[in-house]
Amino acid sequence: MMDKQEKTNLGNLLQSLAAKVDVKALVNGDTAKFMTSLTEIRKEMKPVSEFAKRFTLHFASNAHIDAAWLWRKKETVEVCKRTFSSVMNMFKARPDFTYTQSAAAYYEWMQIYYPDLFEQIKESVKLKRWEISGGMWVEPDCNLPSGDSWEHQLLYAQNFFNDNFGVRAKIGWNPDSFGYNWNLPQFMLKAA
Image (cartoon, rainbow, N blue to C red; front, side):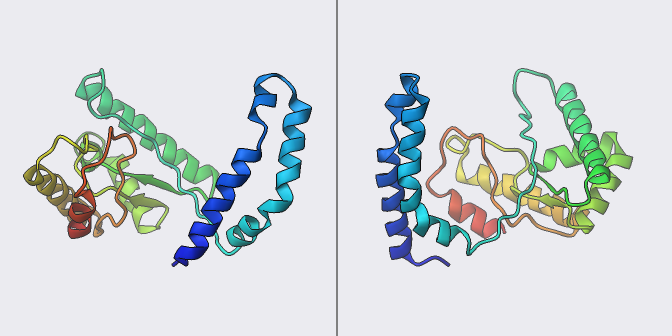
């Protein structure tokens, strides 16, 4: 947990330092003047640097796949297959590589059309190299669905994940939304 006052102070510091960066110099092609402005604020960044050093960041790869964008379902299924096959190749090439994927529909397609790949995904989940996120059947627009729609979206997906992988998504994931429904945190909390 982060102290609220510390967060406020660091946020204010970052805003004031960002305002000191000479962006106009960069726009005008004066790289030297731009770099000088960065050098001048670097010393003032020490509190941010000290704060950041208290944490360890963990990165997980992800592929955003639009299930219903300008192509047919068959093409989306193939995109999922190629993407997930590439992930399996990355697992072999990099022992530290991790991946996260949302949308239960994608997993179900692999289960139906590519069962060998689905089994590899299951094994990767067990090894904690593949994390299931989102907890939704597909990543929807977050403003249009009704409460019942949200409930079913989360219910069916979480049941699928639990039945097939023995896990439930613990991380809400919907990065390509055109806004967020005000009660989305409540829906996700109750689905976890």
